[in-house]
Structure formats: C-alpha cells, structure tokens
Length: 242
Length: 311
Image 1 (cartoon, chains in turn orange, green):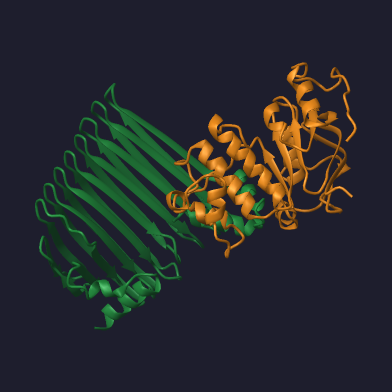
Image 2 (tube, rainbow over the protein chains, first blue to last red):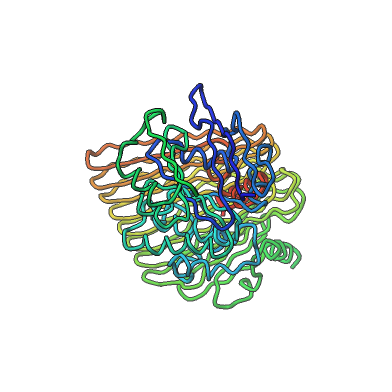
C-alpha cells in the first residue's frame, strides 16, 4: 500500500477547476518530484493534501498511511506525521529560531538541525523568525523545523527557490536526509535539475498529472517547454512504467 | 516597610529580581501611592523626589557625559485596594550621557484606582536613553492609567521607549506621548498591550521629526479579546530634509473586541519621507496554518502568535 494514495482528486474554487481527477501515489521513503509550470496546480495540491483552510476537495480520496485525510483538520494531519514547508514561509514576531525548530517538541535540541541546513546555532538560535531574515535564511530554517518534526511525509513546495546557486546542492542534501530518516517527500518544483534527484517524478499541467515515471524522462519532457500553462488537454499523454 | 515588600514581591512574581533595590550600584526610586518608600542615588545619577498630597514629584538628572551601565529602576504603584497616584517627573539626561531606565508600575490588588504620570524628558545633544516601562494592574480591571509625556530628543541623541502591559487586566489606559526629534537624532516608541474583558485602551503617540535627518518609529502591538476596545493613534510629522519616519500598528482581535488604528502622517519638506502600515483583524491565516502544519491546534497556534507579537 502506498504511503500516500491520491485517487481522482478534484478541487474547484469559484467555478474554476484547479485539480482535475488527479491520481498520484507516493511510496514509503520515496522522493517524488512534481514538476509543473506556474499555475499548473502544484501548490494547490500541497494545500489540499495538508488541509489548508478553503482547500477541501470536491471529489476524490487521499489516504495517508491508509487513513483518509478528508475530514481531518490540519493539525491532526501533522500529528499523523505529514507536514508542509511553504514556498514562502510565514514570519513570526517574537519567536526565536530555536523555539521555532522546537515547535511541539519542547525537548528537542535544535543544534543538529541548524547544522544540517548550513546555519550556525550560535548565530541564528536567538534571532527571530521575522522579516529580519532573508528569504534564503527563512527557507533553510523552515527545512530545519520540518526535519526536526521527523515526519513520515513532507511536502516541500519549491524548497530551492530563492536559494543561491552555491547552496542548492546543500539543500538537495537536506532533502535526501528526509529519505534517510525514513520519510517520503513530495518535492514540488519547476526546476527540472532539482527533479532529477527524485526517485520518481510526475508532471502536472492544467491540474492533471499528464506524465509519471523516471525523473529524467519527465524532466526531459518538461524541458521541451511545450507545457507552459494550459488546460492539460493539449499535452500529449506520456507515461513510463514505474 | 510593608508597601516596599508588596511592590518587590509583586515585581518578583512577575519575573523581576528584587535584589536590584538592595544593590548599592543601582539607582532606584520606589513609591507607593504618595509615599516615597525607597530611593538610591549613585555617582552620575541625582534623584530629587518629594511626596505630594496624592503622589510624588521628582527630578532625575543624569550628569553630562556619564555612562550609567546598570539600569535605573523606578518602582511605582498602589498597594491598597483603592488609591490615587499622581507622578510628576522631570528627567534630564545631559549632553553625551547614556542611561537605561526600567519602570515597574504595579497595582496588584486595586479594585478602583487611578495612576497618572506627567513626565517631561529632556534628552540633550548626543545622549542615549532606553526607557522600558512595564505595568501590572491586577486582575480586576479597576485601574485607570493615564501616562502623559513630552519628550525632547536633542541633536544626535537617541531615545528608545518600550511600554508593556500584557499580563492581567488593563482597566482603562490612556497613553499620550509627544516626542520632538532634532537633527540626526532617533526616537522609537514601542507599545505592547493585551486587553481583555471590558478593558479600554487608547494609545496616542506623536513624533515630530523637526531636525534634518531625524528618524522616528512608532510601533504598536495590541491584542484584544472578549469585549475589549482599543484605539491606536500614531502621528508622525517630518519637517526637515532627510527626515524619515514610519508608523507600524498591528492589532489582533478576537471574540467581540473592537480595534481601531489611526495613522496620521504629515510631511512638510520635499526631501522628508514618512510611511505607515496598519493591520487589524484576526490572526494571520498563513502564520496560523504554518504552526498547525507543525502539529499545534488552532488555540495553541493563536496563543503562540499573540504572545510572540507582545513579547
């Protein structure tokens, strides 16, 4: 049984269908890259999976560890072992980075998680998770906090966007460490080079999965640029066997 | 002395160290109602305080060029269930001096009381002052507190003020501060208040950037729940070349509370600039959901966001 088994998921808002009959499964300890252009529905899928306010699916099922997530509030999904790192994580006045990493886990030592994302605990521990942090620093801290949760399933929405080129490899190592720790990852990206680190990949276009398979095949198809933003109908179906 | 013990016990219960009133290296003044219960001067700090019919009048002087390394503690309060306290303060920080003040205003048992502060602060050229004022007004909501201050910040001087009333009830709070900032000087006013029950909070803070390259910040953080009401007025005026000011007001409201923010900005010099931002409403949805994605329920997440904002 897959860890996450999304079946025929449809999400509509204000008369617009954003996700259409989407089916996608993610196995235990799998990094699954989700490639797609801006507006293809990648972040919406993340919000529906996590149960964000206003993102209830109109059709379909999405069991996690065999438990249907449909009626579960967000914090209970998190307590089941899944979480989401937003593309642009929120900022918090008056909350230190150390306390943010310890959220919900008061006994946790944040130091090793700082180190994993390339930040010094001495420099960052007592800083606030507020607007004084750069976008790149904030994203590293978010990854550290998600790692500290020891999730079974982490949804990472564009984790390398806004990270400088030299640090992208470091971030990819962090993403691998989720898998090494026993987690599965839905790696949402529009950068095909990042998708290549995954075990499997899917391409989302117009709210549909139009291709799933080996990351290189999916990245090659995505790179052709035929799918900039469309309704999913004009894209050629392209599926390779897993 | 009974009043001093009540004040220091309350101070300690709120996390303060009562030893600061015993330390001979730390200047302080403590008053309960109109009784002056303790005071200490140290080299560079002169405190001239007298009892009046309903409070204390005092002049505190920091001598020119002196750097006072340990904070000067001012402990003011009412230790009975009813009472009036009117503090008239003149604070003079002479040229090039630096000092920080920690004012504890404690009214732990008051059922019906009033505390008025009329202060003038003269921060002379090149001086540096930090003034932190924290209040605890008990749990009954019977206090009326009216702090008023007129502050002048001389050329090149720096003044950072921080007002905090986040534990217990407020009752009524009516802050009225006016700060005049001269050339290349800096003034920052921060207020953090948590209103509950039927509390009424009015905060009016005005900074006038009168000198060239003067800088000012008014930052207000207020949380309101139950039927509490709050109105924050931040006034920033810039009248000289290179002056820069910003007004930043954030209010989180819950239940039937009502919040209002009134930013007023006025610029009379083409090379000056003032900006403002105000956000009033419930807890930011993205902040809330980010914490919920870490396993906190809605109530835990809201509490954490509010306590962080008021920290």
